Image (tube, rainbow, N blue to C red; front, side, top):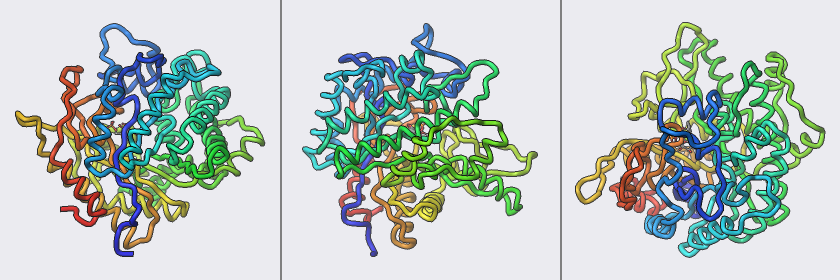
Length: 476
Ligand code: P53
């Protein structure tokens, strides 16, 4: 093979809470992702260290309106189609379907919205790729049950999945159970609706919640296949291989430990059992994860069909306690890599790291992969017509696509597709800013929520269109 596979799925990705807005429209309930404001306290809130359960005076909550894709989806999908998208990755807002989370009957208005959206995609031959939960959890489930720390979440999540698989049978074939499932360890309120009480063993809570999500993911895979054998279910990892800071063996050991912390989740979802290194770690830390034999059977029997991941950067670890100079702007701790340049938010840019990560995941699992996020968050400066000459973004994407091409053509990894993150500008998950933009399409809205919400094509729009039209041959 000397070219990308003919049916390679090129496209872009978004998440409900970062683009839809309309947070209280058509019966939608309140979710964790709604109550995370912009500003200094955001990090403490998304990591569960500072409790915020509702809108508070004096804060700005960007997800309330976001770029209002709820009312612009036709226009936006038409633009994706113009770029030639084969797939569009989006997520379901749980609280549109079950506003509180524990209802028995779903909210018809919410179901209708996504049905219309999926039909709009199919009008242009775009295959939807659906994340069932992208960081969102109904606030009611958090306040009433404690979020994913509670085993009852399995019932509510199963109900959500059943409802979606039944209603969208024939409209959706590709599903992801939990966005960046490893985020639970780094941003537990955002990842799993967890906040902590004084003095409690946070690691214990996080791994218990992780177990619940892993079993929920297996149940989802089971039901998806039962309802429609055509369904393909994937897991989703915030990926990025760790490099040792030096050739000192203890640095290599540190990097391996860090990688395992992330691969732990995929080891379970792709292989079906808890790895020994995790059991030993829990033993050492005095963590006792409650699980039933039935849970373990489910994990074993219902592994995922494919492995999806986000990739923005590689990471660096050191086993030397004296070495601590961390990069900025990311919830994932990493040391600075002196060989790499950084984005305006301090994320280090490493295209070869994508090839390395693809190979590492392929070597570990031998399951088809899907890159479902990659891209450059940058400050864009539109001219008076609204046009942005984003050569820096084109440069980033070109190099990453070339690296991905090498992994497929030179190394032989199996890759289903590639969706760039934030194909239309949207609210940043990490910082809540609007000015951290990833899109091919500029949206007129600023950090404070001002702007016309008008959409403008950037220079990268035409570039990506040509990449897709040539099936990855023409990257210039
Ligand atoms: P933002 C951190 C590290 C890696 C992936 O992130 C991350 C994060 C969260 O900041 O999240 C993914 O918007 C996530 C998206 C998110 C995207 O990366 O902080 O799946 O929701 O928007 C980019 O620049």
